[in-house]
Image 1 (tube, rainbow, N blue to C red):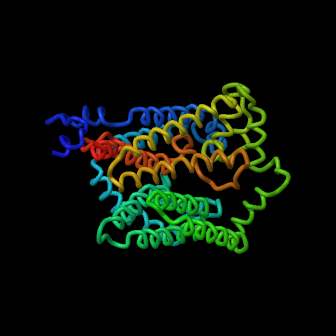
Image 2: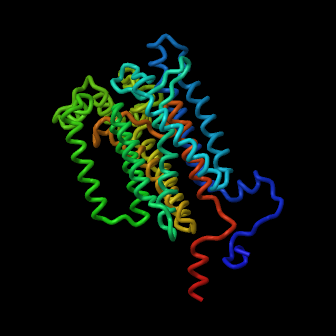
Image 3: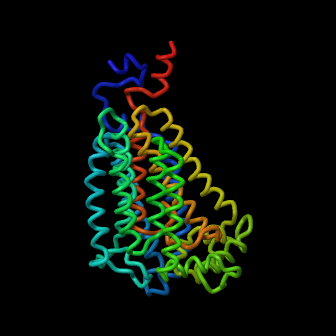
Length: 388
């Protein structure tokens, strides 16, 4: 009946799941994701052998790991994208509480791997960063709560989502991981803004974040050191930012040539946080613009499809997910060109990192599930019907 009323997409009874999924999924977005992962493997072939040699490992050790975790991430993305919206939401709620408990236990069982922030669980053969898995499911549960609050006699979902946000941000600050904390706040703010948050409230939140940042600068040596390095008039050429800045400058428009870059021998995080510096040095501005274009196409395609969606929960969750995904990419590249202070974030689907890749696969899988063409029609169908 819904399809007859709203003029929706035709439903094919008994259609197998794979043809149905392929017919309804956004193939442009999937192409962008696979292209980003392919570029990540290409850059990994250049960036990771020096680190492997330094650690006495096989030259392509980190590339092999990236290929393995990337394949797992892409497979996870496809599987999640086949799920119904209701199933995605239920699994996200369960995953959120599991990830939150893991985040709470980090101070007791976690490790910092000598980086000054306790963010990982060491499993011996690999490490897990709970905050990466927490971010996408947090957005989904926040969108669900806020959407529920807009229903007649609905629960105080906005208040509950704000309370959850403060809990998550608090435990991220304890690590300390102020970058991820800001990203979580940003994602929640986008969801709340799209749901119709008052501007005065958002301004007050921005002021509170600024005040919290001042407190972190005063009492956290880790945070203050990064801010001081960012605000310094001169860049120390022996720091990661110094090496990255010089690599981007040397790359020019077309780069110095494949395998000819020098920054990968100096940067310990060349294959993760500063992978864009390797791209800029060896392939030049052309490669950097291609990467930016892929992220931009993914974001625009997703937002375009979400504007047609009737379900408030899907609109809120999808917008929050793509906003957080895009902002992480912006932060990573902004750090490399010294527009932002160092935050230790990976470039989604390009940087090496098991937790980042798999969590990204989950996030984009949920996003693809939310933006699939639904048989009940689009919001435009309702507007056209009412205008008649």
